[in-house]
Image (tube, rainbow over all chains, first blue to last red; front, side, top):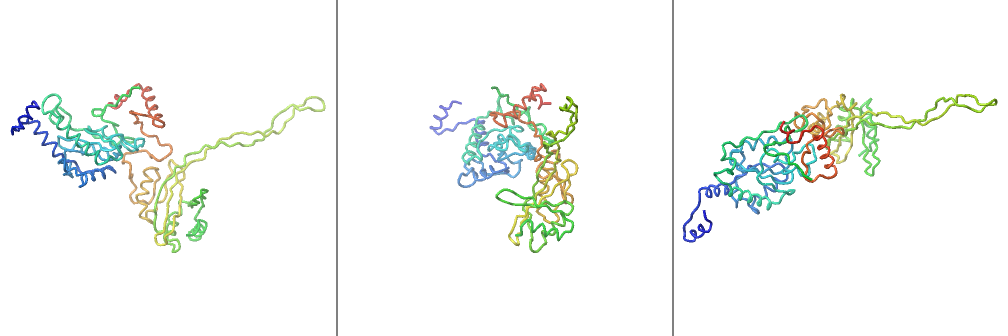
Length: 202
Length: 233
């Protein structure tokens, strides 16, 4: 609807909205993260929820200890190859709509441990990530920024049409394959449906 | 604390037949260590813990060392008989002469796996005493006695050494992998460990990473399969 008309009506004391707007407003104002941390980034995540930074201001104060009750997975820290299948499994257990914030250098790319044999080179190889935060570890402000970015993303989602989000598309993939722990490495090394191997052009 | 030589003498008098060798540390730390034979390890460990003067009641650290097979090239002087024409009284005469020649010989020094223990005494506030043990080789005879029955703190650290180096501790109550998953087959801290080839994507490769990315690319061109297809298989 016309934004100008809406403001004009608001001045007259008439509140006009759409179902989509109301629905997204409700969703983005009560995003409950899952209570789990993987490494040092988790300390920053905890700090973000405490009084000084207070993530509760954005409606994300309730950290749920069960994936069934959580809307947001904050992958905060190094994902080792031993832990990766469990992270994917937790993501699979979350109810739609669900979102992922990859927090810190390790979660987005492997970070300082990228050249190691035991660390996954980014969780986006197996699950779709909505917001990536660089930093080692990112400051609480960065996590808040990421959270506001995610809220903007939720606000922009349309309930109908071709570009509707995954959870409203009955044909969309809901389950993401959990990698096997093989004899030398995870098998497969990435989920091509989520992360096609980028082709570098030089 | 006693010096390593004194401790060596104490061990040898307490445990008859124990072979103890001092491994000197030439660095400024001068932290010399003792290498013991695995056959008497349990007795020696018992002695080190229970001796009232040493009272090494705390095992702080267990770690491993991989000594790969070493090829040594040596120059050896060899004398052999060479036939030569020598000036004689009536012209040239063939004669056998002894000649010394330098020859390079290569020999392979077999490698082994070593485990290192750092012992402290909480009661006497001294330490560390560094104890080493070696396996016979690094392929099939990799058993060493576990000191977990003596020091409980060895349990997880011996599991870690087993996980990363492949040293099998006999007498360990629960010898499983601790850091890597159970299905994992390799020993990552060994020198000859081959890392998984998962450098398919490098946004800004440099130095070591560049080499690995190029190696990966070379393999891709060799097999003619692109990464995307390879993963999809």
